[in-house]
Length: 296
Image (cartoon, rainbow, N blue to C red; front, side, top):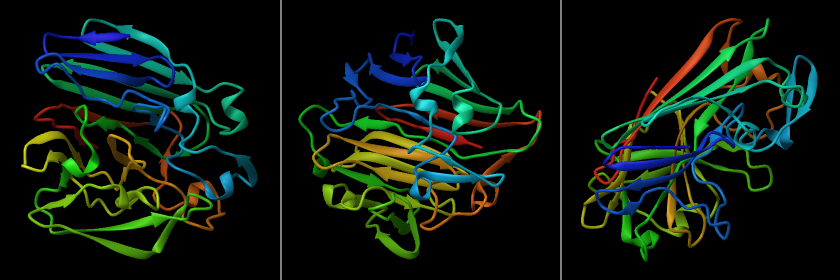
């Protein structure tokens, strides 16, 4: 599906309801990572019903162990297009017998994209269509591409109003969080240099609603891409060696802590939605002088 106006063009794939292209017509610039599998085959996946990994790729639900995969199954399932117009697309995924093998709940996940000027308004909605409470985490994983020929060291990350941020790392074997050792990201003039060394241990994970605004800027201070993420409890920043992109990831819940093997409903940061209730999350994206605004 393509939605567009005079300023931008957005392509969305029904597989995962994933935005696969954002093109800035005004500046003739590609904004979103192109999915080159040399570095990463995805663009901007929706993470559901789990962000990151469960410990040992297993989760306990009502006394039964289920196998899980990193970032959940939504990104690898085909959504149904339920609304399409020049500037808006809406996609829906509902539970199937196949999804219940990994996640034994009835749900409806609706993703909508609507553009206005250079903004993309994104809405994630999880509806509980089951007769019991459903637990889940959900997040975004957009990869923002550098200008052609640029590398990480041509950029800085800017965190307005911040002097320091605390982050944790992931256990390399299990991909789960190590919350007992906290690191400091020291900022100078609200910025830190972007480089490959940042990601030697995979993603940087920020808890406790620390990041409300972050920008990918050129070293001279000009803004390339940014995100405003108010009241998101968790946040990830990630890339891979030599890749010309960085992922800025607002999450509501995250991967397990190392060793977590209790009931999923008791996991720290889990979202719980009662029968016939819904969870809703809204995101606005913009680029060049880009604003990616997230409101709970």
